[in-house]
Length: 102
Image (cartoon, rainbow, N blue to C red; front, side):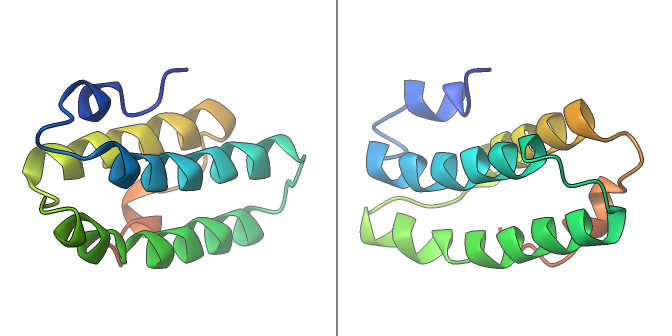
């Protein structure tokens, strides 16, 4: 799975180190799923905590003279959705993403 391909292809708009930050969080999510955790409530809580961490990305992108625009936001949401649905089909993606600020 190639994460955030569209954002990496547009390094003018999205500096690599900014996209790398998001990718690290996505890799942590994949590793969490692959750790074998099965409790749905714990998984949802983990994802919600990751969303709070990712809420800081706007400042990171601003520091890189970039922005989390609609395109970047959709890319990130699509990647999170793909990861969640690959490992669990019983998690309400909209519910766990409700606190995102990007």
